[in-house]
Image 1 (cartoon, rainbow, N blue to C red):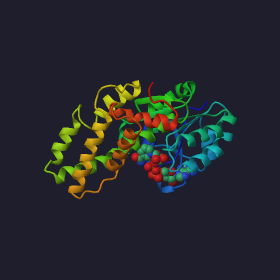
Image 2 (cartoon, rainbow, N blue to C red; image 1 turned 90 degrees about the horizontal axis):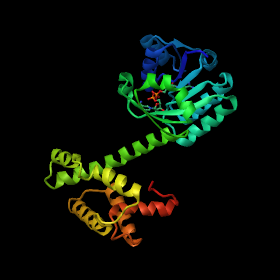
Image 3 (tube, helix red, strand yellow; image 1 turned 45 degrees about the horizontal axis):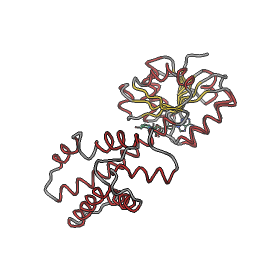
Image 4 (tube, helix red, strand yellow; image 1 turned 30 degrees about the vertical axis):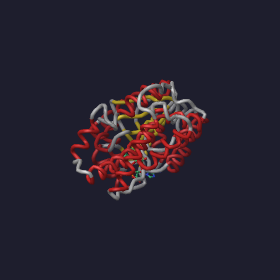
Length: 295
Ligand SMILES: NC(=O)c1ccc[n+]([C@@H]2O[C@H](COP(=O)([O-])OP(=O)(O)OC[C@H]3O[C@@H](n4cnc5c(N)ncnc54)[C@H](O)[C@@H]3O)[C@@H](O)[C@H]2O)c1
């Protein structure tokens, strides 16, 4: 099978992906935006294809860096029947796990293998080779894709079945975006009460402070073990988050994320979790979803 790698999408991230792949071996790229395609070809010395069929005829491995799940689906539907059985498609565009599973179903009837390799970082890190890939797919398929994955990024984590890499990326970004709201709310409360922004950063960066301890202690050591004895009771957490709401009200600071989080502690109390460590709010989701969070 050809060692040329096909690349669909030569936009902001696709250009950086092209740079990494071109350093590894021959690349043929396709992008309907001829300006972007010509720029990437000039910068990285990759060959350009006139259409999808030309890529399909030249490669055994294809990387996708496309803007929407619908476009990824269209490309894979057109590509899979044209590729040799045993070829590999690596989806790096950010999509949902269900989108990747749909791509896998389009490829499978033709014996074409497909994995997801979400890119955790931005364009700069991809150019520099310092990105991390969050990977999903069958073990054998991920092993077969090792040369292309290694060309893209040294840091890789294989989470599990098809779609799990994208799940990890979407969850990671959801955490980052929610925490960002919490931090801006916290910064506004600090500004109004004589705590400097720098002092807030110094406080929160500590390993026993409010940013890391919910992860390293409460989630990792309590939720994942189902251990809620001792610690700080939910009723005490509720009392303290009531203080935060009062502080924000006094200072006329709108709260969204912290306000919403407070409601969960009210629910926890109503559900009988008052004397358990406040990590026991995990029990609410276990009841609602019917899926245990402890491992
Ligand atoms: N930019 C980032 O920092 C970043 C980081 C991680 C993941 N991603 C993901 O990577 C993907 C690409 O992002 P981007 O920033 O390069 O977007 P972009 O919009 O800059 O580039 C997408 C490119 O795909 C091309 N395209 C559209 N239809 C095509 C087709 N049928 N065949 C081939 N090419 C086609 C477009 O012309 C465009 O050049 C997205 O899914 C994005 O979420 C981006």
